[in-house]
Picture 1 (cartoon, rainbow, N blue to C red):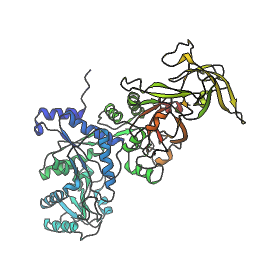
Picture 2: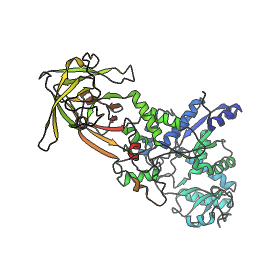
Picture 3: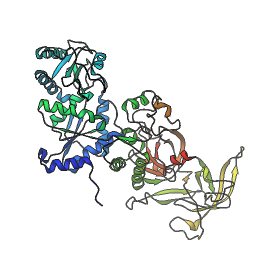
Picture 4: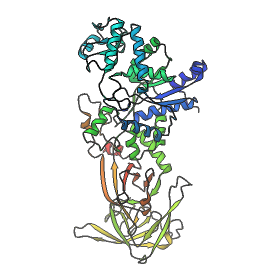
Length: 554
């Protein structure tokens, strides 16, 4: 069945049918370089680049770098890396709002000359009072009727650094009685005597977002400027600037922002998590940042698929995080190499296996991928299994190892548990088993039925690694939706657990960044970038099944 067209596709279909812009489609992704991109930005990236690709158009990457006090080249480089990792390419179309500072200044001069902009000496408190509110019309500033000549002189002085920060602003002259608060003489320029990451100390004034955004769009000939719903009430101002200046008629179209349960996407709040040490940094695997998700082991394909399934809506709504987790598991199941790792080792001695001998047994890398190939896993007289895979007195329907019971080892043989040895505290420290030589995996002629299958590692060849398991960072689905309560109250204290000296099969010693693994029965894992040759660290991306929902029902 053909998929229905979302409202943005329908708008573009109509524009092309009417010959608007000669059928061209040019979009842009305009991040502010004041933090790392998050899952909400990922949706916007997929939408902007995806729409352009669908209609044989192009997408520009433009940094909205109009606030030098919060911006940094670190953020610029991280954003570029994230977009490329997601699988998108802006080719040679990399722009900055700062590229247009001279043009924007001239546009402001043009509005002053038209009597549509003026320099205001009011304080921020006075301007707030002048604006009124949704029920009370605004009042004109006492500086609103300055002459064109005086405004030009004052604006020039702002530019050259004559005046102090906060002493003057340039405002558009629109309508102080407009029901839309954004149209009540909005600020276009403010004085900031701060060095800019690209222009240095060339400028003492910087344009506000509403002015810079639409003019940058027009400057680049953006046909469809896709924004989140928070900018819906800003659209009349966007259109006003374009109309008054007679520039390219870019069109702003709003769509619902992405809200995911158990996640926060406010840059200000994400910065608090970093600065207050709740997480280790912007790329902490618990963060909803793209860099954090990449480090945790999310795949680009899973995020793109999630964005596709979420779709494009006209109204904000909350998306169940289980949809994101479903997309991730589906992709990892198809591409992850199956390996064995033992988190809490219990030694097993196979008493009838010849001492000093070993064999290397074949193991499929991924049964879901016929082209994934196989590897060899070492097997010998002594192995390790998980401690909780053995019980002295097992309950009914327990299909793992117990005395007197047969159990299969993954990719190896069937074992019969003959006995166990206790330590001084009464804990099981060692199992003695016999193996069935005729039961080798793939050529079993033993006729023995073993219900349980256990993972294991060779005691002689096992590699020791560190495993970091991550859970949801917040315990509440809407951590910032509780009025005056601080969202940090809902941080999950158990969102990170670390297990050292985990034993893994030797193949993992060659793991590389970007490799995806499924630890048999444990979940999906990736190598952490902080690993070294003598200290491998694996991050658990996600469990094999959703254990969270079961925990919440207990």
